[in-house]
Length: 151
Image (tube, rainbow, N blue to C red):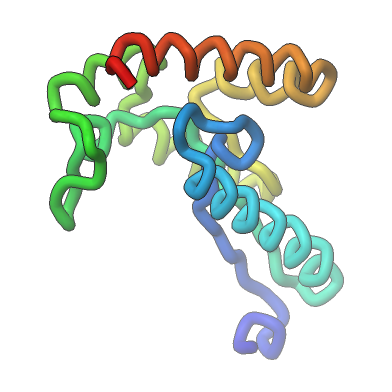
């Protein structure tokens, strides 16, 4: 469209680390984020010769209202807010302002896949070289979560 006609632009799509790593008890979410990542990567290749850049944000856990089970549109999780927050805190959430600054720096550098906090990049790299190990870790996490929640 317009970006191709003018010869420049930058599309930024929001995926998630769930695009790389199967989220515990979140298959539909992971599948949709995997689709966003795939679309972004394909568009990046197609747009490169036309002056259009594309990046996919793949945040780990960012400290937003969703961590407490809600957001602008109300509750989005089945768990009570205190339990939800306790479970997310294990993953060391990043401050949203820090995420925004770092992500914007990466967009300006034309990075295709943007992952923050930094420790999530290590997990993504581990998944690239030892996916069965990351799957085993995810299975263990799902079992631990089920035990904690009595499910």
